[in-house]
Length: 436
Image: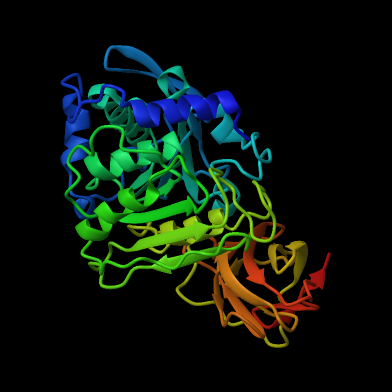
C-alpha cells in the first residue's frame, strides 16, 4: 500500500524530531478560536441548518495561516438542510493525499473511501478529507490544527452539522493528526480514531482534557508508538490502567479491549492485531483488505455509540421510536439482496432492504436466522440482537423511513465455524421478503 521510500521518510521523521511548536499559531482567526473554546456538550445544530446549502461536494480551497489550503468535501446524496449531520474528517498518511482518502484507491476504490467508513454511513454523515502540505502533517506552530478550525468554520456556516458529532480518523501520520486534535481540540471533537500513529505532532498541545479515544495498532508495527499515545487518554478519561490482551504473533487475528472505569461518555477502546504498519487489517490473512477488514466496522460502532445529537426539526419522514405495526396479514412488501464476503473463520454480510410496496415504511425490524456457528461481532446502520440464532436488526435514528421503491443498506461482521452461508429467509415488520 505504501512505498518503501514513504516508510523510510516516515521513520526518519519519527526519529529525527521535526521542529514542532506547542501551541496553535497566532494567525488563527477569532472565529476559529471561538470554535475551539466551545464546550462540546453545549453545542448543537450549526448555523448552516435551515438554509440552502452553501457548499457542494468536491475539492474546496480555503485560506489558513496565510496559505491556500484545500480539502475534499462529500455531502450525503439525500442532504436535508433541516437535519444536522455527523461530521467525519479523514486524514491521509505521510506521502498520501486527500484523494487517496476520498476514493479509497490505495486499498480498494470506493469500498475503502474514508477508511471504509463512507459505505457504512448510508448518507448519514458529511465526510471531509483535508490535504496536508507536502502530503504530510508537520503541524508546525499548530498550523494544521488551525487549518482544521478554518474547515469547521466554513462547513458549519454553510451546511447543517450536528456540532456534538464531530469525529477525526487517520492512519500513520494521519493518525498523529487525529491525535493532535485529541490534544488541542478535545472540547470540539466528540471522538478520535488513531491508527498506527508514529508520534505526537505538536507535543500534544493542551492534552489534559478527556475525549473518547479509539486506537488500533499492529503488534508487528515497529514504527508506531500507539500504546504510549493511548495511555495519555486512558489517564485523561479516568480509565483503569491495564495492559490489554493482544493476539499472538502468527494468529492473523485481532483483540479489541474496552477499558473499564472510564468517565461516562469518554470510553477508550484498543484494537491490537497481528500485523504491521497497515491501515485495513483483516483476520485470517496478512495485509490490507477493503472488503474484509474489521477495522471500519469497529470504528463506526465506536463513533455512532454517541447517537445523532440533537433531534432534527419536525419532518413527515422522521421515524417513530419503534417500528410501526404492520397491517393485518403482513402486507408490507420488501426485497432483500445479500452479499457475503467470507474468509477462514470470519465474514462480512452486506444487506440491502428495498421497500417494494406502495406505502412508506416508518420504523422497521428485519428478522433472520444465522446459520449455525455464526456469531455477529459488529455491525453498521442497524442494531443487532441477539448475536447468533434468530437475530433482529432494528433501524437506527437516521434510516427508519424507507419510501416506496427506496432501499436501506445495513450489514455486519461475524465469525463462523465453517458455514459462511447467508440466512435462508428475511422478514420485515412481520412480512416475508423476497430474496434477490
